[in-house]
Amino acid sequence: MRFNTIRSLYHQSSSFLSSRGYSSGFSNIQQFHVQGVTSCLYKTENNALPWTCRNTMTHRSTMAAELLIFLNDKKSLSTQATTQVRKVGAQVSMTSPGFVYEPYAPREPIPFWKRYFTRTGWTRTKEDIKSELKSAYAIAKLRKSGYSKNQFYKEAVELYREINTLIANGDKTSLRKAVTENMFSALKNEIKQRESIWSNLYWELVEPIVKIRTLRARMIGVDKNDLNKAFIQLTLEFLTKEKFEAYDSKGAVVAGDKNKEVLVRSIWVFEKSLFHTGAHWRLCGRIKV
Image (cartoon, rainbow, N blue to C red; front, side, top):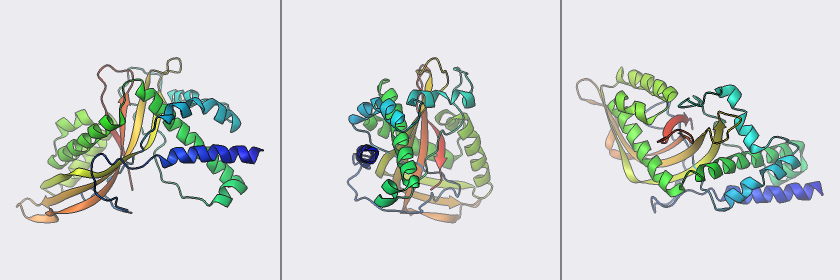
């Protein structure tokens, strides 16, 4: 009986996972399968992925308590979120938690027999379902503030272009407004290191972009008594075509070719406060591919 129940729950979760296709609203270009492609701009480039959400997401978030009780976990999704207060500190005036909560990492697929007939497989199934429920809960909270997936994707692409352009131009003043404090510190050092090697840089995003999708959503509570005082982090994956060229102090080309398009896979984490007036999405992290 327990096996059949687990199998049923996993099939529901799998169908939810399968809905995470790439968004096709930006381009009709055929999907590329690229592995190990990193940014041509930075050797330390962190990349980010996306997932699309369906109307069943809110319904699935209401199943959290029942599923987690079945999985012998007494903490509800909201409790899991607000336990981050211990790490963040109950400072509701903060502008950012200062870290990426549960950074995305790809997981190796496991065969059917191992998932259902081994202890490690059952553990993996439990972890996968809990991860999906956390994402569903975060998106459900975000939707209450007027979130629209398509509108957010447009804003994310614009931020991707803006931030990369500011980095290429070394415009740290404008960059500060588009990223979190910790991210700004990291990018400032990155720009300083790059300028010691290249005097100038040309960067261009070829539009429309190839693909975009959401990989993960997480909520970070900062007040255990008020779940509305929280931050949302969305991890997106971009597949883009970009042009890049670097110059030395004499204007000679030393890297890249601005006449050639390069396919780039990037994973970025965007963050937004749910309780600050006028809050907007900012880059808070990049995940290495």
